[in-house]
Length: 85
Image 1 (cartoon, one colour):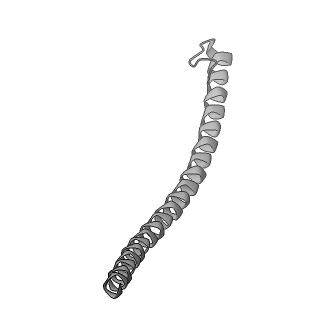
Image 2 (cartoon, rainbow, N blue to C red; image 1 turned 45 degrees about the vertical axis):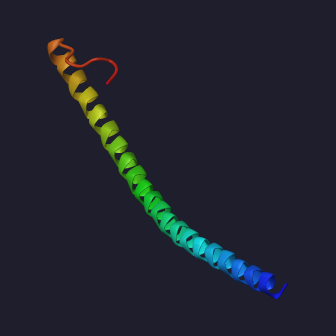
């Protein structure tokens, strides 16, 4: 009976050690993934700001193109751009 108790104690200790080791690796993995998610979110925010800026520039350029097109049309009767601009 004593030998079985020793085996059980060793087995429980081994299982505990394996679980602790696995949890430790999972903690490190979660920590790494959390860092990467934060980095991706930050990058996404920067991309969104850049996209807003580019969309604003695009609107300004389209407005300027329409104004130039209207001036050329009024003076020479030639329409250079399409209506979708």
